Length: 222
Image: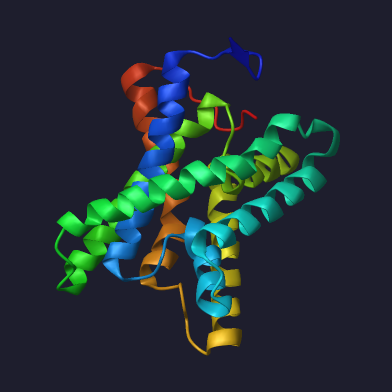
């Protein structure tokens, strides 16, 4: 069986699902740290806090909006499979719930240092998840899908666009929270760290992988 012109192998499917799970594990660590949600979930969480929209519905709305942006950016290059990103959000939500439940077995952060370590773990797992699932070229999450689209249109490195886009998401969540709640809401120190360092961490993982295996992983495939 083929998907996106490539054979849909067990390795591709495994890397895709495993990568998504690693990202949700990173999201769960960010929530456990209590230093702010991961950038990928900051706007849906802000929507939940402001308008009491159930987090799964808020995530669906957010993902659908990003798919619309992709359509505007890619135009003729937008492929029907990209609409599937909306449905992948359902799987992502289920993985997130499971990952958050795993955090019950980990003691709460009783100091700033422990909380920062959890934030660093969040950054690492999200970056590692991106490294695994983006190159599979199956169906990206709309957050990465629109990042890929911007990287393709602007001809800039994925890691650089990832930083800029994450910062934009965090800034938007911060503005929404401050305007409607009068506080920072879903944004904290951990959110800022994630926005600044997830992209460079993906780039570092890519370099280490290239040194070890000699393989170049394409992060712009769609």
